[in-house]
Image (cartoon, rainbow, N blue to C red; front, top):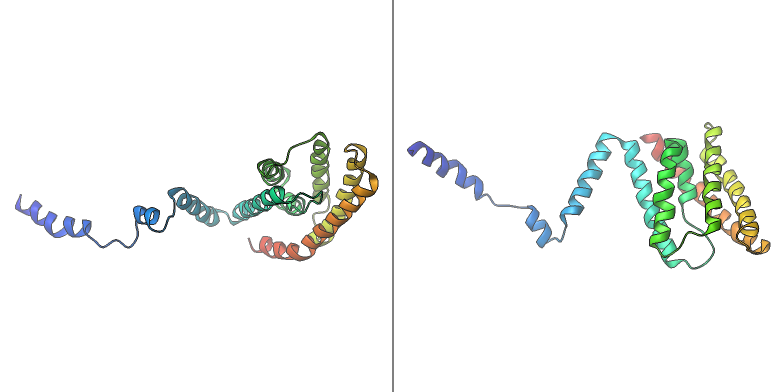
Length: 204
């Protein structure tokens, strides 16, 4: 008994009364960090350690989701500056069509609905056209994205003019003007941010 008391006095009590710098209660009450945020952060770190390629996919998906959500929430013009097409082409080349479908669902359809938009009849044609254009990426695996990307943007937006005018009932000149402006923005994405993505994918 004396030995047990001595161990408790010399080892257990000092251990329990150590000065705490951080613990879960401190983070939640004083720094206002929720437990769910800690779990998300830990999951991100683990994914980065296990597989950097899929970590990059998750990062691009999260970024595109947030961008599309605020675009849908605050943009009330017919101009579409979302990055789902631009980033989707990189996803198609690097991860294949299955993850492209997941990426499109998470970064175009879901944020649009959450941001206050709705899915209309002509949108189904746009969805199909999106995947058709993205599949062309797989036919030219050795062509740099900064080259093939702008070309496919033009192909996509030419199709968008046809869908808007024939299916959506939008006058041809309005559809052409809108597609022309969005094409310019998307091409700029490829010529600027595309170079950064090339570096990121070559490093993982």
